[in-house]
Length: 387
Image (tube, rainbow, N blue to C red):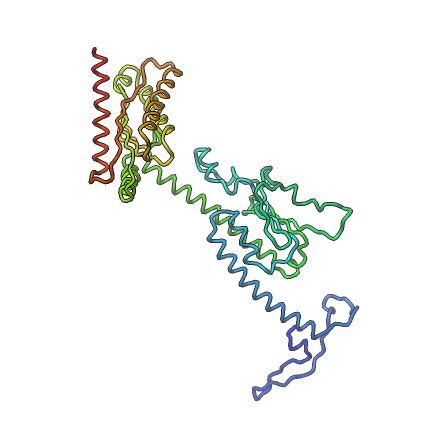
């Protein structure tokens, strides 16, 4: 019913192009077969229709803003804070979003599993998973901190002695996969205004797109690793050295911050391969590489430069810390050989150099120097064995 009709006037076009207004009578409720139980206020009805149109337009603008902001979010929890900020017209006593516990840690689980997880391995198609977290809690106009919040704490109102409280549960699906659910307390206003489903659909689509984006980023990173990582040891290869080590050196040089360069070479690899086979040689290489990475900082760039040669570009540490690192590497390698009862000693030769970024020396200059120090140690070991 238009506002003009509600006021009792309907425009009718005349031949001359002007309008002639004729009297009308508003009839309420008859379309559904009900009888007039009360007399309707036509002016109040018209006013309500006009206000509803204004309110709806405002909500549409807020919904568009919500959709825009959700596209920029990087985590599910970050998404949640935009709901009340972009939808101030959302009137309910409380709203909660409960999601599958692994929605925010796909990358960690995929790396622990060692491969890309499929959707079938992630989500339930029947029922809800046991592990679920409270991602969003909005109560009485304010957001609550959900850290450590338990689902059982959210609904203490299930007390049948008290009335006047209703809960609306809505499942959250990515197609046929169950990822969580929404809970709204006293959602009458949202349902009457038909705002609820638009908000839910907007949020669901944004969450699914975020999850797909995370999978795509992980896949791209794994593909990139195939080019810069050594498949046997997990260390960086020569391409990784060029991309990461050289870049790190240039950044530190610009900032006048020194680095530690380690050149490590396995002892007697040819002897092991010739006498015990390449299976033993490969095991020895992987053992040494793993030990090196275990004893380096997370910011270090460990590189396998050749069959049994390793290079580490490491943050600056003291000489005492360097001595402890080298000692730890040697001891762990020896312990592994003893535990595996290997029929040969497993040792390495190491050369270490601290850079001086005040000079014009390049990274290759320091690598050659560390290589020379390592080679001197290896030569001394050969001389001892001959004696």
